[in-house]
Amino acid sequence: MTPFDAYKTYLALKNHFTKESYDYHKYCKKTRASLDSFYKRKDRYFFEKTSRQRSDKEVESFFVANFASSDDPQSLWIGEIIRIGETKYSEWKKKIQSLSYVFKEDSEKIFSSYQLEELFDCSKGHPPLLKSFLSSKISLETMVIYDQIFHYVKDFDKKLKDPIWESVSIRIRKYNPFLNINVFEYKKMLRQIISENK
Picture (cartoon, rainbow, N blue to C red):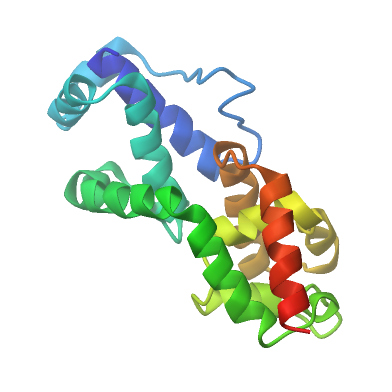
């Protein structure tokens, strides 16, 4: 990967995580970036270093980790990634490597307080699932896995018309394609947790 390719990967992923209409995979990572504008950037050295030190897949994962870990991908700028990106990437890799453990912990926490139906109940405003995420009791990864199991995001989108849910909804939907998991295994794990907490 050239430094310019690393820059284009960054731009494409920024578009993916912040724009409803842009899909990183569907548009094959295409952006309108020009080589001229790249060479005028003061932070060019960062993309040079990134492309030199990482494989193509790692460059992609590095930026995915930073956008997925940000509470507000819209306001995440390159200076912040240069400053704390490495830390965010390391934390994310650890989480992904122990994803089944993270999911199990999160699920045990949530099902010790709520029944399955209660968890997705939007009748009184924000459902317990969303409240648990907003109070950092469960991770974004768990929210994504729950959507892969229960497909609740579309339902919440219809029922919750507020900016808080909208910002969480786009984060879940945009992160979803990057989280490759064995849904069957996670369903099995969840069934066991639910039956233990009945």
